[in-house]
Image 1 (cartoon, rainbow, N blue to C red):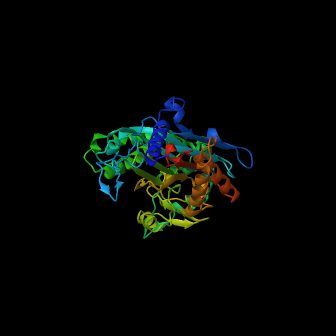
Image 2 (tube, one colour):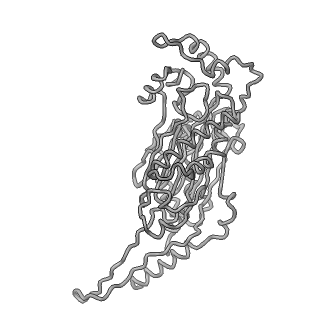
Image 3 (cartoon, rainbow, N blue to C red):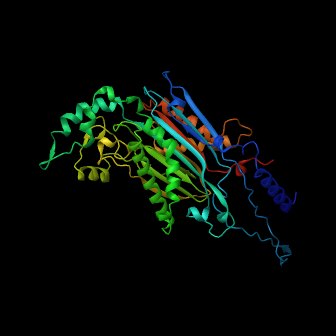
Length: 438
């Protein structure tokens, strides 16, 4: 077959692959998933596993780049063909993505994790979202979905109450720093309340509330007119910071859970050209790009140098009690909730921006049940190897992203992870680029 005919056939196949799939374009509710304790609770020793996968459907058809012959120029009796490439957003219309998640109670007595997958939680042009790699191009001006992924690891409840009773009553009420007595804040009110008034069944409630509410609040904050006129990165920073603070306030004002209950929050917003990640706590997100595993977050631990200085600067104390903990209780320095440890535990996120690349393989968000037993590099290597193998398979019922999530969960459990394990994997290679040609 002549080269130009091959190109035309490839073009036709691409256009057929990108046509709307009526089976996938059903209802928006079918594409949104929240996994919480009700979905994944297990009473068995190995843990019953809740998994789900999905595909963000291809709705808009990409306009293919077609080789164009210029006026013939004889050079050694050969015809020179010139191909003109049109600039496009890296993620095209941010459609055709594939994702999967897994969550298991593991060796814990209670399921405290919650995860949220919200495809198209916003719809905007890439130029409007910001950070477009092809400004002024056709794809940058098209309305495209912006996707949201979040992992929330709850903590607190009866275990924290028992530990705080032993440590804080004897510690906070008598300890002084440079002659200044530490304020008792909400701890005194909480510790001396009758046990009958405390509901410790809600130590997953903050995580569940975040999974149901966080994406809505962030979208609302991003749309605020007060943020217009800022640079695009500054606008996202303000939206995330305000969104986390609002969610934290709603946990308190709506009495979602006792003041000794909280949750981590690691969320990623995925546009056609940007990966924007916001984090409070020690859940984590990484990006697999080529042969690299790029951390998108840094764990906020009490003994991290800058966090230690901040806590001690506010009159707090970090105590090594089965690891570094704020006042010997909480093993992280930032979280949603945990009002009894203010001002040392704060709901202020750290935000990172990474421009998407054609080399990107996948995005992974997970609770510390994975990261406690596997390094970023180990997770990235497993994900890359499995993705490449599974992508070569045709008509597989389990998507490559779902296979990676399941495999990582199994490995973490096999490595004796003692915590709940929750993982989201987003395959960043669009479906139509991956299909085999015959």
